[in-house]
Length: 462
Image (cartoon, rainbow, N blue to C red; front, side, top):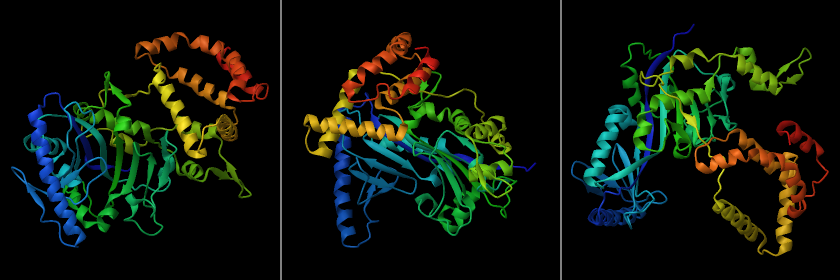
């Protein structure tokens, strides 16, 4: 068996938002807004010089311990951005202390996190923020990347098919991806699985450094490992999590929304990422078949793999030895389980109100009016699209999803228990409800799809 060397593990990217704390006073807000005014005046000068093709590096703002460059531009939602070699801070004015939107966004440089370690880097940054920006604030992490650099296993195109992931948004690196623009040619470059809020990247870090020498600082950290071999390539395994995903994760009744609960559970988060994107120990023949979507018969005809076959392969497979070798995060193994929480039901009529307004607003924008005939035409198109895509009528599709959510229902709030107790009534009256609702929704499905009703009767005892 190959020996895997775990060279370095850390947080590669960290971004968080600052929210007003109940502890801040009106004097704090006044002083903070005065600082923003000074920074905005420098921003205007930087913009003027940029337009004249002059250097803007001279527009520095002195704080107590260091200078920050004022950028001529900023990101959406903020008024001014300042930066140094370690962090970038985006800021906007505070109107009232009860403002629920963030007044600042902080982005850490990867080199800062790697040189200092994420704990010390965070401590240094927060100390600066309290002394120079705002005396009290609430931190919520908006994005975090956890990574592990390894040697002893060279990923290939076949490993793309060996990973069992729930996401369907999976792709190889190529020139069309900004993250992979440093690669060239047709050689294997890496792959991504998942979406923006939650994804896995696997790529050759050695090749990236050759293309971007300014990222070579990580090599000095690799060399601290006595087993590092400079003649071999280093691959990086990196998980990206954004706040929308973190808010769905719960550990010990705590949602991973707060700053401290996330940093205190990196070992558990890492374990969940490895479970959700699980590298399986499949042989090359099966990996090739998964990559092609089938196997060739004796006449070289590609026979498509059935979903049952694929599921069977993954179910019977073991976790790859590499995944076991990197099971800990900086030496700390998971000591608790993170569950994904999705609130399946709500009894708040505001959701109905907003959904119906969205339907009318979109129809108005598309058609230019909301005559009854227009609304009827929109509903007809909804019916046709749903049937074409799902082979179901609108009502069938809606109720199918509604029934599926019963299986995931967890009693978390009082009204969840009400849904749980009434689920049998909903199911038992489902067929009657559908038949009496078809005409009201211009959904001419009565008597058309009897297989759907038969399936409901069999699965739910309706």
